Amino acid sequence: MMQAFIALVRRDIQLAMRAGGGAGLGVVFFLSVVTVVPFAVGPDLILLARIGPAILWIGAMLASLIGLERLFAADVEDGSLDALAGAALPLELVTAAKGLAHWIATGLPLVIAAPFLALMLNLDLAAIGALVATLLVGTPAVTALGLIGAAFAGAFRRGGLLIAVLVLPLAIPVLIFAVSATNAAVTGPVPFGTPFQVLAGLALFALVLGPVAAAAALRAARG
Amino acid sequence: MCNAPNAGPGQVWSGLTLKGEGLACRRGTRLLFDNLTFALPAGEALIVTGPNGVGKSSLLRVVAGLLTATSGRAWLEGDRSDLRPAERRHYLGHDDALKAALSVRQNLGFWQGVLGGTGLDVEDALDEVGLGGLGRLPAAVLSAGQKRRLAIARLLVARRPLWILDEPTTALDAAAQARFAELGRAHLAAGGLILAATHAPLDFGPRARDLRLGGRP
Image 1 (cartoon, rainbow over the protein chains, first blue to last red):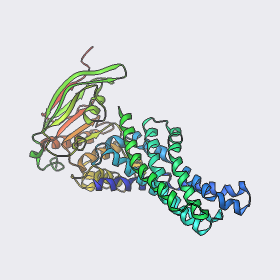
Image 2 (spheres, chains in turn orange, red):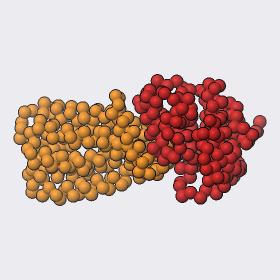
Image 3 (cartoon, rainbow over the protein chains, first blue to last red):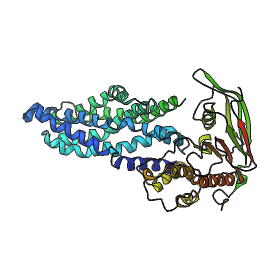
Image 4 (cartoon, rainbow over the protein chains, first blue to last red):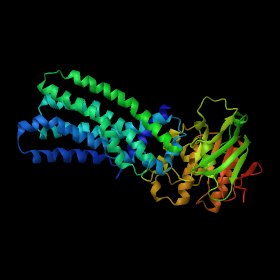
């Protein structure tokens, strides 16, 4: 079972890294959002530092959703999903493996890019540390919730729009607690740990819910 | 050579029987088939034939567990392993389930890993289907027939008793069709079962029976 899980994760990472696989797209989108904001807001360093965590998180969250609509759709179209039903893995772990691969290919680069982009928004060291911590915990949650939308998009073919409509409301709590944890690390008065623990709880919840709900959606669409 | 791929402990599968009981399938408002009952013992093949749209693929998908039957059930009787039914069968559908961006070897290696490879090595399986030496090529440059052969190689890298084949010889040339029939006969000789839907004649030997759907005028 472990062998099958690893084989699936490895293939999906390979596919994402290929030209046209879309792994770089998320980072470029993230970079674009964060670069454009200072031009729109103006050179007010204090204001930038204040809204910086929110801008970075909005960029990271939207970037996490890029590429999700093809995650299952590609496998549905080329018959891979039918063959995967016979894998030595339950469908819940198939969706989890695909989610993990998607996060490694698109979510992890965002976490790595974030500290550099944070410098452009005048964030101080404490804020950058808190931001990276929240991204490391929060982006897997966004990807896991995104799996649900991705499964619907795959099941109902033209479902690209569904992802934003289905996933964004579910991801809002993650955004709220991630940004408030980062702000808390800089300005207080709440300690960083309080919202961060809620964020971690939300992430654990999403990591369980996402793959199970995605598998249920794929099963329901089969008939 | 023709016994090579699946020769082995045939007796492991000898007690198996694929049974279908009172199967019915409705797609939309159309009843494709109704009250379909069959039993397929180990070592035999059942070839489903019939005109287009009569429900051959649906029957195969029902047996594979990919489609829920309107009524009735299909199961593998005498299966003493603790694997899920889906892990006891291969389903080869219309699509080849290949990723164009990956190489031939990567594609097959992936299926070996995911299906819990207990069969041939990737290289040996490629040799068996006549793709030896093409392992490094990206799957994108293969011809339709070669893609089909690569999909067929999936049957060889993981040993499973039941092969469910939907139009398996589409796009294959005459030599490749004969080669595929050989692989099928070897699988039957090793005690395997084959359920296939086809329009082209499939020579699986004397142990193949026909199941004709859509007899009604």
